[in-house]
Image (cartoon, rainbow, N blue to C red; front, side, top):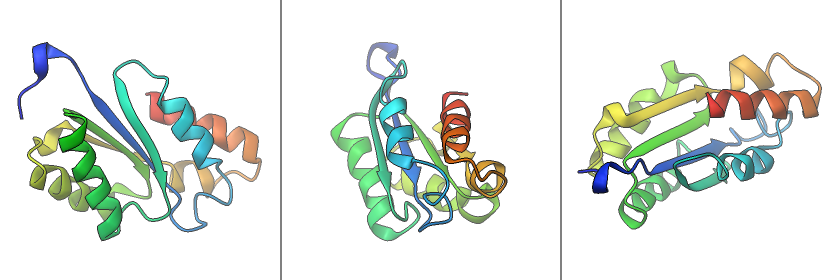
Length: 127
């Protein structure tokens, strides 16, 4: 997929991981925040981003919004990085234009303060 005029077009996806993340992190607030970041053209949250419907959402957004970068904030990359790289590649995006952010082990599982965990998730997504 070629970049249109060099413009970076990012899709950001925040996973609830059932309640593993959503019980501690306000995932909707993180998605709303991500939508305000430079270059982000779509930001969504979904209960299980690694599921077939979650992957299909990302693939459809790549096509509909001409995304050339994808960020998924979810669980451990050791579990699902390959899943998401394959999904973006099936949609025609170079799989190395995908980045995974671990907001489960690095955030929701190590914090109990919802507000602080949500702010940390925003920081991790922004990075």
